[in-house]
Image 1 (cartoon, rainbow, N blue to C red):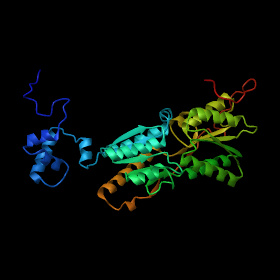
Image 2: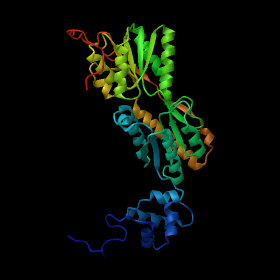
Image 3: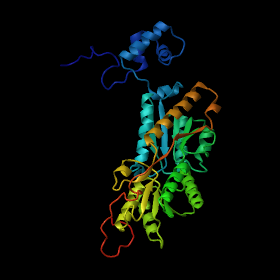
Length: 377
């Protein structure tokens, strides 16, 4: 069956974008009148507006983001720039779940999420400036907060609506949502101390990130308060770094009896090193993680972790940013949202067999000496 050109409605053919001019021709009005109607502006009668909107719906017209930007209307896009290696992001379960939570809330409001991976913080700031100048996004989510973060004053100067994921503090006049990493750290340390561990180690992520510094400080302080030996081993956010750090801990004259890892991927990499070295979990070394995902739950033994829903964290962040965007649009007093910070989720300790006494049957004793070291690749 064929369709003649005459039977097609103008602007409604497949692969052909419907424009304001198409709607104007059907409605018998000017393109300017259509623009006023679809953007909810005065200048056309209610009857004309209703007729134009009905024709737009019939033709399945969608506004052009570029045209909306030129007209000063919302572009319905939120941006997020990441100055992290792609290979690290690709394996991070927590980040994937966080983005899923963001998308869930944004999609309900018909917003899109535009993400970009860059190599440096300077490149991230330049992206914000370009997006602002081009009206590419209505607001941005800022992640991986640092102690003296140059992105904060840059965004303050731009006036681009933004929400910082991280804190408390160090986010300037920008609003933020955060998880209390100091409280999470105390939960882990207190749990291990109650089990009788006197020497604890922490395999830490990127030392530039504020949440890493907060965890480091809380770990050292809480161990000192309880009279425990505290060992901190930097590893960066990556499995290879976690392997090297774990091997270094095992090589100590007196290795720790419990190790806390900054992420679930790092915990799995570290447990692999422990198992290769013949260390039993938890009989010889207890293992815990700051992140709880399917990786920690399905590992054998299952790994004790801090329970904090990354999906819910993303939902809270998206909701907060949309509120900031709405306030900016309505020109309400921005001081109501400025510098506001709130705890997104209360962390809880999820105890599993990797720290629970008797949680794992004793493994057969390995024959011959076992040298601690990295797993063979």
